[in-house]
Amino acid sequence: MTSKWTQVDRDSEANVPTMLAQAIIIGTVLGVGAICCCGFYLTMIGRVVALLPWMGMVTLIAVAFTYVVGFALLWCAEAYTGRMRERFKPLAYGVIGLIGYAVWGVLVMTTLMNSLDQRLNGTVLSNGNVIALAVNYAIFGFLAFALAKIYSPALAARKTLAFTLLGIQIVLAVIGIVVMVMVFSALYR
Image (tube, rainbow, N blue to C red):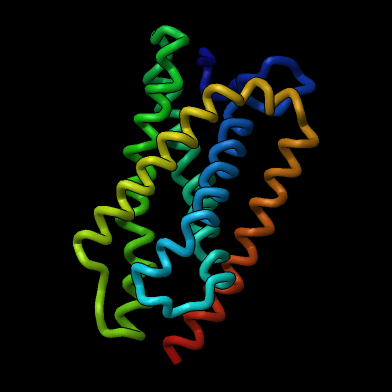
């Protein structure tokens, strides 16, 4: 951890900053997880949207978490694990990601799903669906933050790969924004 908040940790000047590399890994893991589970989430709301547009919206939620809340959680994880043994740090990062992403899933994803489901079907998510969503988000949060701690030095050294992954995340998020605007503008006319 740096001694001054304005300093940036990096292994060398040629590398990507460590926290940015961690965020890119988190965004990649959560984005892949969102794409893999978008069908599961869609069945919870009765398939009210086509799969590909839904995938864009779900990926936007994952990427938004990464670059809005994720940086704050990474800073908290770094501060919390400052004096911890190195072998336990990925677990601590994972627990912080588990809590943060589970809360994000319950608050943000359920709101998105209920806003579509209630308008089209007249129902909202059941408690069982909310719990399943929270558990799913918690698992991906743990994996993303633990993997970010483990693999950030390797990604930080590979600038081209890091910025390619970041670019893909930005493109998917922009697609998600466009789709979300189109869906909600048609839904709430």
